[in-house]
View 1 (cartoon, rainbow, N blue to C red):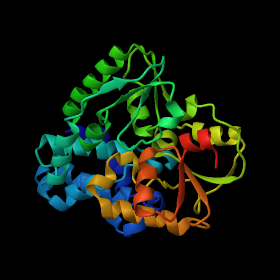
View 2: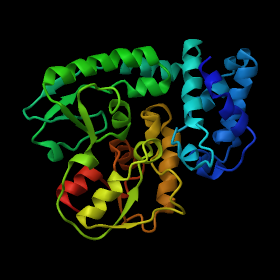
View 3: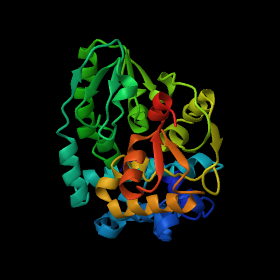
Length: 321
């Protein structure tokens, strides 16, 4: 079982309460099962007896994790609770026990077919949530679906690799040696998998124009917690904006499930609850300018919290506030 590689995490997290305040879902459902400790206890049940994997409530809880990795990032020992969840999902899929909604979505994601359009020396990946063509008018554009990251996160590793191979071939056929993506999840996957191609997040590529005023940055899970990158904040400061701290602390995740990639498609009510918490924590929901590096986060906030003023990092760089 894949989870056996994470026995240290199970043994450490199942009796630890130290990071429960950093669990995005636990902060809106108030259920112990929705904290790293609760999920580690479930994984321990799987480890002790595989028959426990037939418990649909257990499996549902594992899939409802937003995977923010805030708990891992701020854990003094950096126990990889996010990695444990991903391993558990692979075990669940290989056992044929993935929830029906997950299987249905996986079948849809497997159909991704990629095409390259336009002209330019740089290739821009337009992910399924992106709608920011203005920032990349001088680039070729590759589109057609998710790169395989969503399938990987759902536990369908073999299918994820098959989709990625199609994406990789399309990139090679483009003739470009630099690929830029706005989606932090895509960046997290592609930065180590595209041989001979330089992969940049848009915050590392766009120069942007000078601006001014106060903005609140909703830190990306994949940029901050997975890759320890400060490029989004660095860009805003470089452009002249004053960053104001959002929420009660700088450790929590305010991405509405970004790290789970397709969280809103599987659990719209939970995604809505995560958005409602962001509204509650905003100083002035009708006036504050919230900036996110994640097209997913902007799309979900626009859907469930339309009263918020949310801008994608690419947009503020090109258009200003």
